[in-house]
Amino acid sequence: MDSVLISTEAYSQLADQLRAALLSKSVRAMSVSGPWGTGKTHCVRSTLKANRREAAFASLFSVKSINNLKLTLLDNIVAEQGGIRGWLARRTKADRDVYGAAIEKLYSGAAIANDLALIAFRSAVRGKVIVLDDLERKHPDLDIDEVAGFIDELMELSACRVILIMNSERLTDHSKWMQIREKIIDRELFYSPTPQESTAIALPGHHLAGMITPLITGCGITNIRAIRRIALEIDWLGEKKYSQGKPLREFLASFILMMGANLHALGQQGVMAKIAPDRTGSIKQHDQFRSACSTLLIDPDNEFIDSIDLFLRTGAMPSERIASVLDRRCTTERVSELQFESIAVRNDYFWDIDWSDEEALDYCLELCTESASFGDPHLLSHILQTLELIGGPEVLQSASPALSTFRTTLERQPREFTSQNYHPAILNVLASLQHPPPEGASTRPAVKDDRMHALATGGFAYAPVLKLSTTRSSFVEQLGSMDAADMRYVVPAMLNRCANIIPNCEHPDLEAAKAFQEACTQYVDDNPRTKRARLISAAMTGDYPAGQLESARNVD
Image (cartoon, rainbow, N blue to C red; front, side):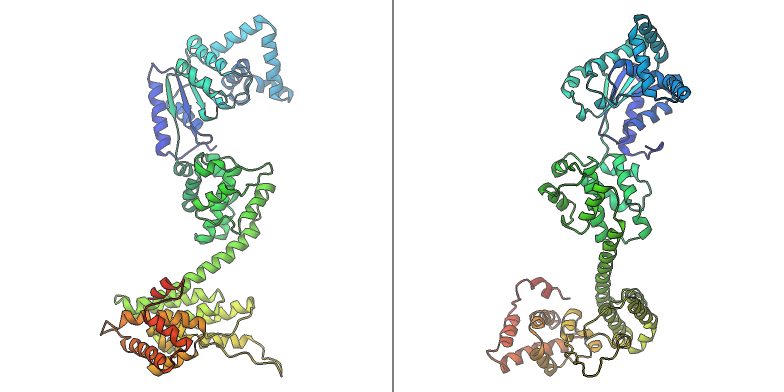
């Protein structure tokens, strides 16, 4: 753990409680209990240092006897560089534990040696604050009663004050501790920081802290070491500079959930408490795992799960595979966002009177420039049509750099495109990149006219860009030529749009709306008992195809 931690509310409260206990003469022994890895020991050390208290520290991790614990405390007190056993080890280059065991045997081998050791120990610790850490990790051979007796000895015979640090929920002899604690502990302190506080301590200034914190919170992780380990394994994402959108969130949520389970660091409430790794480190994808994914709002079968599982089993992060998925998903997401922004520009151009034409053109050109780099002819066509709608055909000259980028992108990443109703400038670029068909080759099928679908989506104001007439006769012709899929979407959507426009006598699209409505009536009258007329009649009475109600009503 780093030597400096950011102070959070829970951390500051614990420090204040420790300080108050140290100032109170009636508090000789205190306990600090809380989850693993949350900074309890650091807070105790910092508070003792700030209050200039002489202290000796010892961890009870795997300690089998009180004599061994005394040696550890003596080791901490005698010298900063290893103490008694360290002094021997440096001179013999041997393992410290071997000499520790030898000294312990010497002490236990003769009563006089034992007494001398006890006298030396009592003198060395007299008046100090003794900090005993990791009570829950002591060896089973060391009984909790022995620890309690040792604490009493420290207070009565050496005038020590004792701070006992532990995770009481993990004590194997918890019931016995609950019975004897009131006999030796004067004040019990409990430290339970929130996941947000632990993340603030673990990841100050981290480039992904904003995304990680709510996910850590959702998983109930408070272990600072676990949070830092998770962050360490995903630091490589910083070099990629991914946008903080849905794809990156799905990867991070999946990784934090599975890595947290692997480190046994998930919260102990609800489904999180039931998720654990198997012997290989893999996380079983059972019902509890799927429920946890639902809690984090991610797909339990998403594309990242297998890659993360591979990392947990092998220790090798498949970063290239993960990056490939992120690149593809982020590109798809951004293309969708740009399409939405292009539609929003058209809407704001007509309905936001405070937005100047110059600002609209500048913003649209920015969209053109970014869209061109994706090499998506449909996306760039849509934005060029928006640009032409705002500034007229002459403004297309300003889009030349974007078209050049679009061409370069396609040259670098060749792909096939089906014939569609793209903007003429896009069609020119595509035509220049295609080789002429060999003699005798079959011609391509006629290009589908999807202008009515675009009109239903963008509105009547989009008609000039689509080069689509808004007269009644033109609409009657379109009603007779659209395919079934377009009829199901276009007719209800357009009639709904007309119903919103016609009551407003000053609406700029009033005549076009009336023309479409009249065209529907005329088609039904001229073609009775046909399937197209039946569809139009149903739409005119307010019906919608199943599953299309909301999309047709919300075209505006």
